[in-house]
Length: 229
Image 1 (cartoon, rainbow, N blue to C red):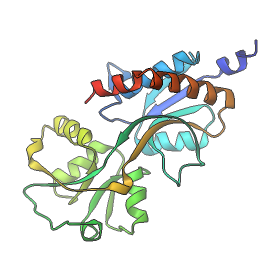
Image 2 (image 1 turned 90 degrees about the horizontal axis):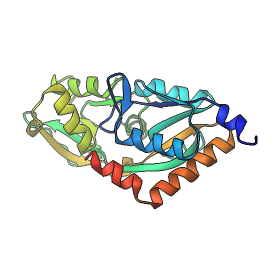
Image 3 (image 1 turned 180 degrees about the horizontal axis):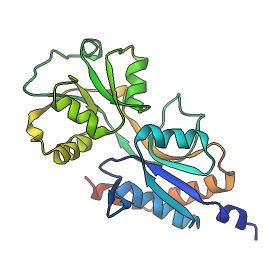
Image 4 (image 1 turned 90 degrees about the vertical axis):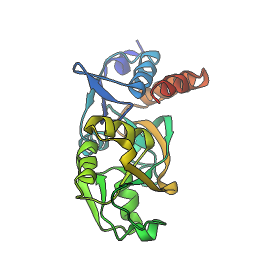
């Protein structure tokens, strides 16, 4: 009987389109999705619905609505107290990319400020670059729109992981050899987590966290995530 109020809550699980989270036949799938579903099932939180949105919308829901689980969210100092962190799914590194046919003199962060950079709204990369004093940021809602701006010359640079870069090349049918990595954003490289909204009951957060920790200790998380690379 003690478990029933918790089990009775519907958990709204939200994410964006990435190489680890995408839609096939109307269902959200991908390696990170598998990790999240396995964690919730292990935690006996069977009543959940997964939806994929533009990042800013998913982020906004997780900021303001109870019982929302957002995943593949970067854990930053600014976000630390805005969410309840339930487990690190993977680590990522962001690199600035340019088109090979457009040589730009970028050697460090300071020199990159002269160029326009495509980012996604409310994404950790936008937040990081803004905090570093970048003011030539061009904002998109979806990563594929952001990438298309690079291809069409509307922006000079985009920050991506290597996995993002290869999946966006596939999606836009662009030959990836035409991309060049100019530098790595070491400070923006971070862990990607699943995290609950603040108004989510303690018991839900704790059970998810415990289930996830067990999966991680068993090596399941690593095994599932490595399949996607």
